[in-house]
Length: 383
Image 1 (cartoon, rainbow, N blue to C red):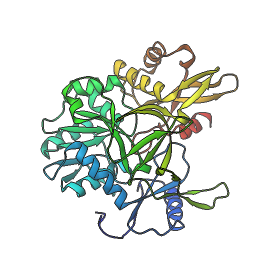
Image 2: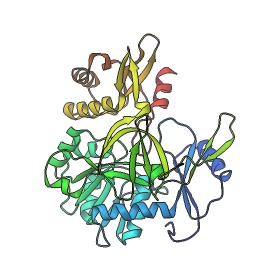
Image 3: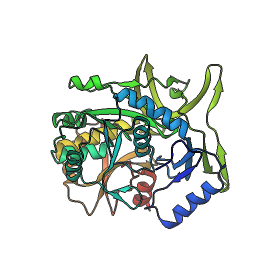
Image 4: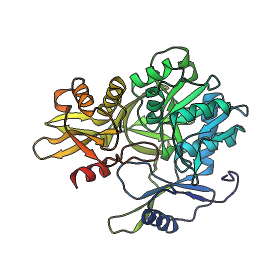
């Protein structure tokens, strides 16, 4: 455990990383400022840049206390930990349990926190352990839905973060009894920024995201979301273009306090948050602006409708004539009718956003949270 009230600092790293990459991260950590009472974690971004984020235990617990209040969580709850502890999604569960006195039941701990996911055994595990709360990513929700698995009766809320949840996947999960609460969060904010409320479970409509009370949200002139909270990060260590370690505090001082600017586009209306996608998600195809995040949600819906069982992802490929074009990448070792999937998707997206070709790869590279590592996937495709 992390001894939340101590001054000890921890560095959490995926033990399944290649040895050379682990060594590189550890050297980066060693050359970073020696902060007390902090937890360092690697960034979950998809760019592949070597970067670690310093979160104070105070910030993590401040976030945890407010998430607990949002969930009405207390010591009677039992959390299922099915996300890696070295990611803010899993780390947040541990902080919430510490703050509330709730129990944590770890689903299939393997090699220092790496979780082996199996949807059928997860349902059985939650039933046997009387789990009441958990956090999952859309990929895991997709697996539960595709296997037609009903929710155990004791689970009262399931946070879904780490990526956008399509409305169709939400509807399918709710029809199977899963009390899913879509969320939006950032590593830099120590976990959640906004979440659907418990009251949203009283009807079947896709819920809006409610900004949690410990944060203030605004947008800058470029339309990027900014946050003010005691849960903000301390700083970030990364390698500059010369390979030197650079530690920066990305927050800035304004007349009304200290803020952090994200790379996400959105709008806030009172207590509600509306997300438009990450700045880097918008690409140009033949002069048309395409929201790649929206396209990925359409692809998620297509997989559900076609009951696709393989591993596949969309990827944007640089195109000298068009700027970019869209392609479908499939795991050549997984079964699935990718041609029918491609046809269905292309019937439900604008003409300029249709996937033009299929690439078969030995693996779809993903983060531990299931996000596609687009740069690595492009490298596999383009060589």
